[in-house]
Length: 127
Image (cartoon, rainbow, N blue to C red; front, side, top):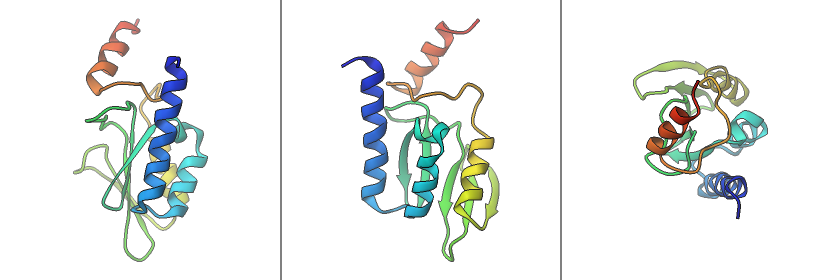
C-alpha cells in the first residue's frame, strides 16, 4: 500500500470510529466531514469534543481548534489549546466555519506519523 492510500485508510477509519462511538452529535460530524479541508484530517473525540489532527499517530497535533457539543444544542469552539476560547455558537455550521477559518496555513492531508515526525518532515520541505 502506498503512503497516500495508507493515509486515506487511516483517516477514513478515524472518521468511522468517531461516528461509531456516538460521543459527537451526528449533525456536527456530518457537517465537519462535508468540509473537504476537515475531511482530510485525522479526527478523534474526547467526551463530547470533536478534535482534528494533522498527523495520524498520538499524541496528535494541538494546532487546530476543536468543537464541544454543549447541552441545549449549542457549540463552543476552543483552541487550539484547552484554555483558548474561540466562541460559542448556535449551530454546527457556525462551529465548523470557526474551525475552518483558523486552520493552520498549509494544513493539508494528515501526515502518517507522530507530531515529531510531522515537524521533521515539514522542516525538510521548508524553503
